[in-house]
Length: 347
Image (cartoon, rainbow, N blue to C red):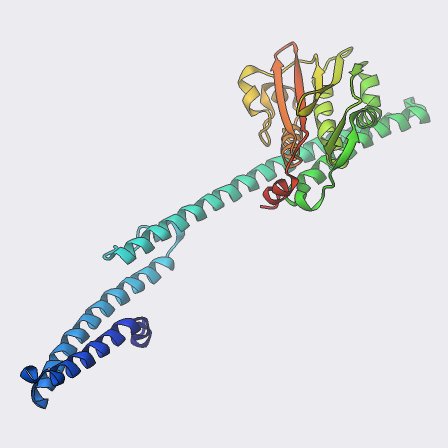
């Protein structure tokens, strides 16, 4: 710390000293009984100046030493910085010390979150690549045995594999868009029935292949939502149900109107979810014991559905009984502050 910089910071003290010296001089000359000769007055001011300079020197030395140690601490490695912080000797230095500790803690938390995100993204990419490789390998196998298939059969099978690749690419695309959600949604009123019909048509081959029966009722309900994102959310729920349902399963989709909201319920009679896994079904990358056994789950579908539902102001809940089935409820509140949601999504 340069002396010039220090003196610049002590302007108030310098002005105070000069003002006090001037006041003393005037006061001693005004009061006849206290009037001093010039040499005595200079001696008095000299003593006052000496002690004032001594005070400034000691204060400068303490501040300069503290700032020098502080600067050296910041140049050390991240793990050594807090250990090498200088000991605070004044209230001001204590405040600085606590502030640095808070900044360091926030910094470490940010680094930890970034590392967790990187690891989760890495896990997602690895799982996604594995998912995409499966239909690609199936396509290659179809080519290898194409001599035994008709053209129509080959085209049909290739379409199935391409649909699976497309589904995984779409999931990765929506995964990458979650951070910029606030710039990419348009809220309007939509009827649930045509949305469900569009998704049933999209997944028709899967329903037919597994001979799944679909029961639909009471979907003549209008909800406030973004159609594109809602289609993706329901598609993830539906795909997850299809993935874990056996042949000849039943998928029940119903709508219900409440006093202040509308409900969309999607219920399957699949294998269900283990009780110990229920509280983690919406965590990123969590596949559960059944998902690990089947080895075809990324643990990203329900996570994305939950995240996007919250960003739209909807509420997603899930209940399940193992070996009985799973019920997912998507709630659409009638009144949502989308301005606040937009601010939260952009953070």
